Amino acid sequence: MIFEVIVSTVDEHDVVHIAPMGIRYIDDFVVIAPFKPSQTLHNLEVTGTAVVNITDDVRVYAGCITGRTNWPTRPATHAKGRVLEAAINHQELEVKRVVDDELRPKVYLSQVHRSSTKPFPGFNRAQAAVIESAILVSRLHMLPEDKINAELAYLQIAIDKTAGPRELEAWQWLTDAIDEFCSHPAKLN
Image (cartoon, rainbow, N blue to C red):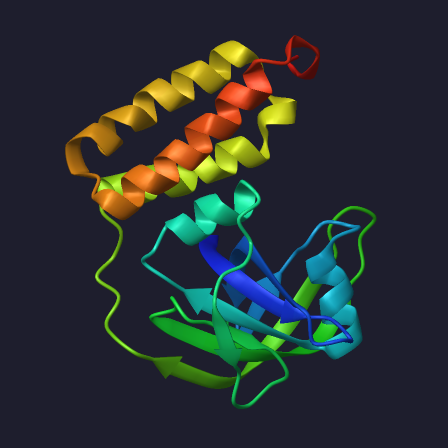
């Protein structure tokens, strides 16, 4: 099973990188499979640490995908890294092993600290739609326009029925990105 989270890492100069990412829990490990090349992979290689952030503010997912990457953070307490201020819980992790792959190496990390600031109530339908839309936006270059439009129309139903102000703001960022992408016919399949 894949869980959508926000992964924060730092580079050798302590510059934070925040990215939405799917992770797996395998045995006692958190497994992250970042693409080659990526800033997340580079940071994991140079620092050996990461923070998995759980947030109910889906603007972070949409924002990272649409170029809004400057989210407030605070220092991690048990591993080199930064915790997303919007995190309602987080895990501080250390790299234990890497299984190399040409496209997506699997990085196995173990937990060195976990903290929770409030219970996670789960996502409502609009929040889930924003996360799905963020994934859609990250794959626009691989999809035909009719598929993009069909997915967006379906997800719009959840937005219309259950979105609050944060979800509406995130949705707007994502639909603007889709409109921008689709206005350049050369980018479409």
